[in-house]
Length: 493
Figure 1 (cartoon, rainbow, N blue to C red):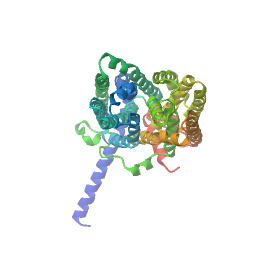
Figure 2 (cartoon, helix red, strand yellow):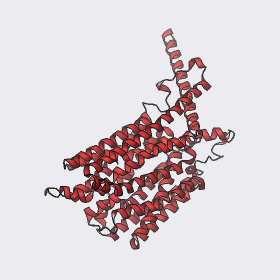
Figure 3 (tube, rainbow, N blue to C red):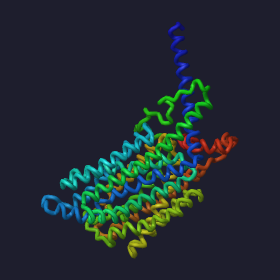
Figure 4 (cartoon, one colour):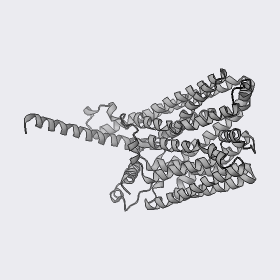
């Protein structure tokens, strides 16, 4: 072996040691960072500041429904436009784009982190709402559709990013946080249908649409204050973690020491990192989402009526109000899911509630909507909180991108499925109850898988699977349990 070979080997060994050292530091920074955020009282302030971006997002989501009659009068002069078809396309394009765009956002999140990507997403939402407003002003459906595509990308990406951003703060009470998220999103929908016509009557149509942009900007300013607190906690954690692992003279904060590797991006081969339970939860989420939202979501209800002659049984505002009434159950559902700690049974219960809601809707739509809202909220909180528990922090973006994308991919075909089956309420009922029954089958499979994997849905460690962990302190287990679960799940089952 000559001198050059020896120098090469020594250089390689030094680089390997440095890489291992950096990896150890990053791991310590991540674990300590999560623990620091969980213990800080500032986490409640971060939650309070960040939640206000959710309301204006969904306020903008259903504004086309709120101004439906005005838009129809505005475009009725143009005989070349089939208004109902173009209006429906505002929601079809919204859902179709979100079958793919959240995957891009998820990769960006895993690459750049929550704060930066959430800023991008808010900018996209503002651009989308502005483009839609300009389209209304110039009577251009092309601009309106483009605006809805951008707005949909922002809204559908914001929910998982918001969940990912707050997960390190509330790992042990994430179900309650998701309940708050769902509740505030429904408040935004109700405010949109109620407040937009009032602003339009008081001022004009364009001002009512610009109000959505103003509300988003206010929400983003508050969100930035939450970002500053989050950054402050991270900086304090970086410094303390380095001091634990290195002499003070070696403390150098560089880009390479960030928790998330900036070169880490979405690749289709990365789906191998997700366990079987994730795919069951993804399929279940899509099934119950299409089963419920197709019927009760205001926009989808209007879209089905204008395309396929499904007669409205109740007014749009009634739909929103009774849906909101059912969502008030989130005050109970959040703590129930978090402290009952048997999500596998609650998931089955949620599907049963959904089936009862569909049946009740045929005789009493108002009561049926309320029951469906309760079932939807329970399913949503159970599913999303379970995904947060079984997926590694660095892969949240891809996981939620796949979840949101797949549910929208199925959702976009629902009007056409309804049209093929039948063009009346019984045909709709047959399709939706079939989706509910399919969700029930998936819920049973989730139950079996959760039993086999020792209750992983509730973030519980099985003693026989992790004998070394039993000897560790409770604090160490609390800091490491997410990654330990993920590492266990990534092994061949």
